[in-house]
Length: 249
Image (tube, rainbow, N blue to C red; front, side, top):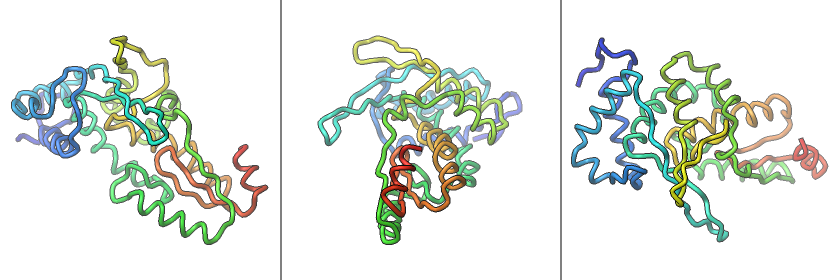
């Protein structure tokens, strides 16, 4: 595999696509709107991956719509996920792998969700530790976070850490990709939302909440300790009055 091809306008190598594909395959998952399963993709993977690399490296890759599926939650409600095609999951993984190390260097130690070498068990252990020191907690999750994440604010955060235009224009395309509903209706984004189920969505969500929650708490409310796992958080406070005040904030 050539690591570099001088004729391409975007520095995406075949090796980057191959490494991304291996991760997507290991994660398994169902077919997207093109109805191509992992087995079918694998059967002709050289063709699929070359086509994807060729388009990504020339800046001409446009993601297809994401397929909306509903999964049951423990409380009897359903959660809507947006399932990209396998090719698009590979494309998203290429950009995620490229950007993640630099974002990891700025992310808070209090953030545990969807990060390398971090998991829910570590988050719970830190919550237990914090509970020994404080008597009150705010237990919260952000309602409809992935559906309502503000594109303009997210892109402001992205531009602070990303100078590469090719990363920005691909992420903008993913943010604006329409959703194919179960009814067959194609719904366009209105400047907000990122599919819960997309490969790059958790990284973008963590970047958004790094500024919207983590930095805000660490800079403005130094007396509280907290643990965040994606859009769920436990915030530890010294008193009931303090907890109620902070919750209003």
